Length: 135
Image (cartoon, rainbow, N blue to C red; front, top):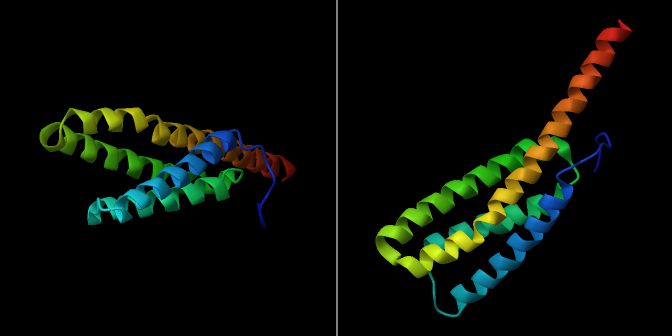
């Protein structure tokens, strides 16, 4: 972490592992798109997930960034919900099954972000208590 306070980041493993998986799976999806399954909406989601993966790996030990990473996870869960509805009503059961298999990834990412966020909030609370007791 640069220019910040070093502290415990309990969600580091969750964010690092899921971030790497996001990057790998998104690279695989880009390859699939290049081989002929091109869809502009899918490309936008893939770019978002690559960005999300890089953010998770880069900021996994930075509780100050946890709120932003939590936002990424929530946005991705919304995208999963939209895709699930599309799959149920348009694309069929194999697509829905594929989505359900990959659903733990954003959930674990969200857990990691929430753990880091809790650590950051606890740390800032303790600092404010220490500052008030010094006065």
